[in-house]
Length: 259
Image: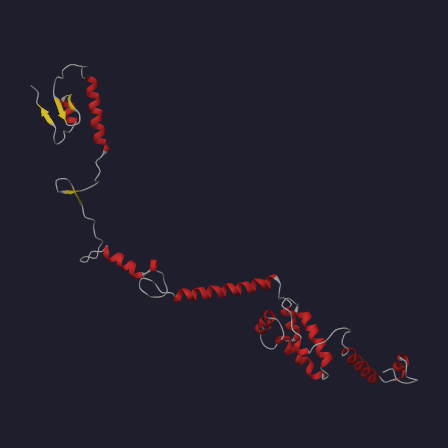
């Protein structure tokens, strides 16, 4: 490459040789230097250069380009071969990004798109896709499950339409279609009892108050005088006509007329 005298030096070559010859010499020297593998490194075939799981895409392209330049002599097929191997030997994430690019992207566009792999935005996009896929699978499994009541898919037993329809039909009258009324309770004599089944506590409270007032007015230890009322609960106590009109006697009460 240095040549013979008098063109054995680079200065004389640059001074006397034509520019086209100098360009050819430069290209030949560059190719020779590129094809020399690094010392102590066993180089594999360029087709075996693959991107690591966490390796940046730009670093992978540099290794692939160096391997192709060393092992491929034809300059016309180098760019096409690098482009094909950049997709074939990329990791799954970069393959997904390249496949989603429209048309025929250039190597510069591919490098720019794959440089975002591993960033928080890219991780969020991947997680969103995974969540969407999981939701779709869960919804598909739900649609395939059958109800234990009617055997139809799409709902659970607690939401089965048959249970709702049966509950509504049992509360409806077959003649008019309205809601059925609850049967009335019967009292002790066999008649129909309306209203609240519990007796009011005010009546018993009023009776107790009247009894207490009457006992305070009666003489201690003396015989009772006037009109008296004998009830099962209170016995005989002194009462006036006003008290008798206020107190309604029970069913078994005994009235004693004035003498």
